[in-house]
Length: 141
Ligand SMILES: O=C(O)[C@]1(O)C[C@H](CCCOc2ccccc2)[C@@H](O)[C@H](O)C1
Image 1 (cartoon, helix red, strand yellow):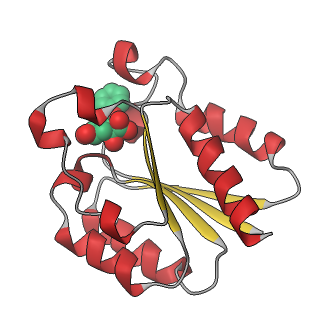
Image 2 (image 1 turned 60 degrees about the vertical axis):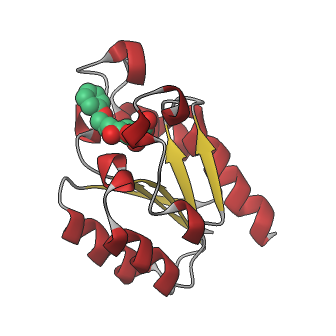
C-alpha cells in the first residue's frame, strides 16, 4: 500500500522544543522507524509550514494513495480550506495529534478536519502515527 504521512506547521521542530509535550525524537528519526515497521508498504513523508502546500499535497495524492496520516498542527483549529480538501479527495485521512488536545487550551478542542476524516487519534504521542498506518492497512485489507 502507498501511504502518505503529512505534517503541518512547526512539526519540523519536534525533538528540539517542548519535549515535555511532544517528546525528544525528531520526526525524521521516527519516520525511519515507521518505514522499518511497515516495510511491506510504501510510506512517504511530507512536512510543510504552509497551508497551501499541505492542501496541494492532499490534492496530489488524494485520488491515488491508499491512505493519509495527517497532523495538520495548528491549522487543525483554523483551516476550513484543509477540511474542504479532505472532504474533496477519495483517499481516507486519519487525523493524528501527538498531544491530547482536549486536555489543553480550549482553542485546541475544535478541529475543522475531524468531520471529514476516517478516524482521529489523539494524545498517544508519536505512536499515533503508527496506529494510523495500521488502521489504513487494516481497513483496506
Ligand atoms: O498535538 C499535536 O500533534 C498538535 O497537532 C501539535 C500542534 C503544534 C505543532 C508544533 O509542534 C512543535 C513541536 C516542537 C516544538 C514546537 C512545536 C498544536 O498546534 C496542535 O494543537 C496539536
